[in-house]
Length: 165
Image (cartoon, rainbow, N blue to C red; front, side, top):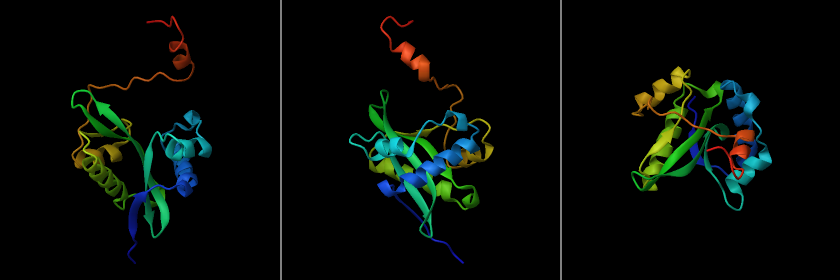
């Protein structure tokens, strides 16, 4: 029996599904200790007065099985906005069906429609299946770049007047 897979923009009624998949993603990435998100916070980020991000949903026969959360950034070298994929997750029981690839294609189409200069994301170095998918689709891994992050108490400290320079 053939299944129907569709992709659509996320709606407020999808927040609970997205949140549940974020928790599953955290477990998959062995990062559940870092999750401080709530459904309320996610709703505000996606659909509040000043949304910080967007999401698309993938459904199999009307059941949510994947999401991609993304936002725009800006390249000073290109002087064009870019599309940055924060997270893409496919529920374990639905992997291997090409849904991740279809979600990436949908986001690439969106980036082209919005005249973005690039489409970027990160991948954990141990996630070999994802790396194989991404490079097989034409993504370039940039090993010379490193992510810099200041969060939590370090961010609060850095924001103080007279912070170490």
